[in-house]
Length: 233
Image (cartoon, rainbow, N blue to C red; front, side, top):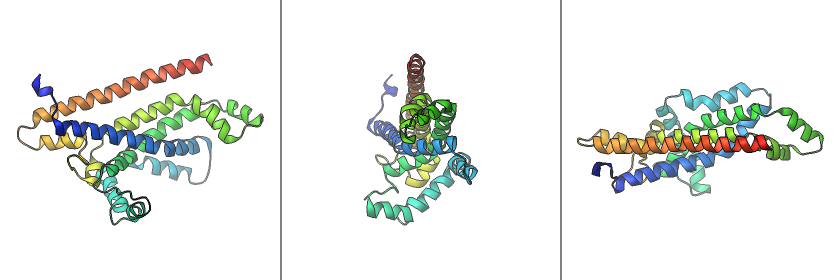
């Protein structure tokens, strides 16, 4: 069983992948909730365009998405220079860039799951609360959001799983730097390219499968528990 033991570099790749995935999900969650609510509850000119833009990363080649991120958030990109100058935040060839790439790639999945959950909420409950004088933000926080928690959790898990497996956009935007931007998929790819690296690639593949499967099981258990609480309420 010695071949199953991870070395330091492999543990770094695992830890970095989990860190990047968590940051990607948490950073994009508020935006995903806002966009999902707009798409689920409002009709306006350009709604189809917004929906198309949200889902664009799903149909574009990941390399294209990564290249667009490099042009926009790179050292010489307009957004990259803005964030570096104003917030001191650098994305290109940093783990923060890997988190950004994962957030962009997982964003459509999060929005879709959360939007479907919002659309499943009975609008009569919201209208009743509004008729009793509750402000829109209060209606959202006390009725819409709690009833949508299962979909919210599903969206977060989908975003996390997508981030854990993201490769094309990440390696194009931030390269494959051990200890800085080398996530699990990048490390697996590197090991497959060197003689004798098959066992290391297999070890990390098993770790990736275990983490993703554990996340899916946890989300299912959490969703069931929340559904039971909602049913009792």
